[in-house]
Length: 125
Image (tube, rainbow, N blue to C red):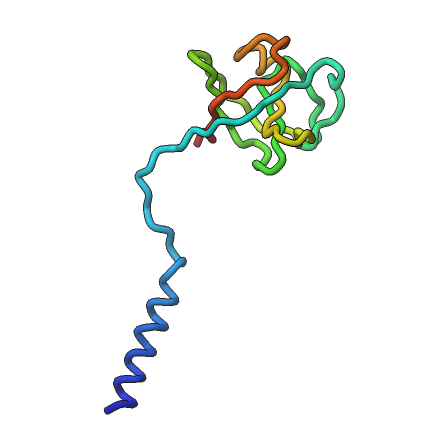
C-alpha cells in the first residue's frame, strides 16, 4: 500500500514538474512604460555602419540600445510628444544612459541642446 501511494505521489510530482514552466501563463497586463535616461548622436556618425550593418542616417527615427534585438520598435514619450523608433545600433556606452537616439528622433521629443532627456518608453508589439 505504501509503495502504491509513494509511486502515485511521485507520478503526480513528475507530472506537475513537467508542466510548470512549459507554457507561460496568459497575461492581460498592458505594456509597462518605464523611465530612462536617453542621449543622442548625429552628424559625426553619418554614413558609418551601425551594428546592424546599415549606414547611419541621423534624420532617421532610430535608436541604439545595449541588448534589445535589432528591429525592435520602441515608443518614447516626453510630455505630450511621442515617437516610435527602431533599434538599429548598440550603445550607449556611457554609464547611466539606456538609449542613444538619432538626432532626428531626439529632436522630435526635445531640443538637441538639452543633451539628455528622461522619457518614458515601452516596446511596441
